Image (cartoon, rainbow, N blue to C red; front, top):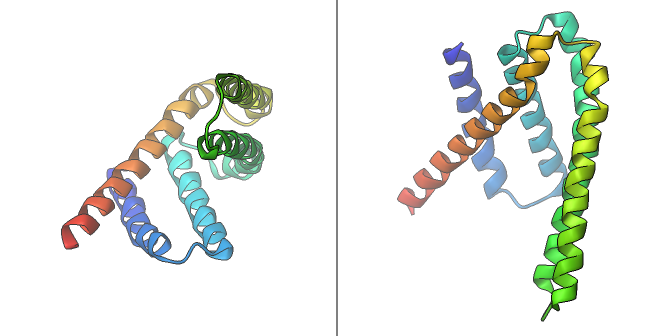
Length: 157
């Protein structure tokens, strides 16, 4: 199993620098995120011990949830950037932006909770229990790989 993780991370190591160094073209960005999503599917399938049948049912639902939460996260980033880029935001603007950001975070949680029943129709209780931990492990491994690549790039400069 650890060999499989190493293979995924090695492949990501090849993909991430190519995308980071490339011009931020929309098609390349979409392709990059599509590939990351495919790696995440493989990672989660392995971590949760999904059967092929479970994979076929789970990932369309999971991707739909992620698409919804990604929109919320994008709204949050836009809100944060709007205030950051303002020449001299007032305390009221900071307060309203902060409230909105926390509201969006709560909405993200509500979206995830709304998918719980859908997941229960596909995953067993143990798999469902381990889902969030597997997501955190994926993100942690992805960030470790990203940091390794950044350090390697900085050493070569």
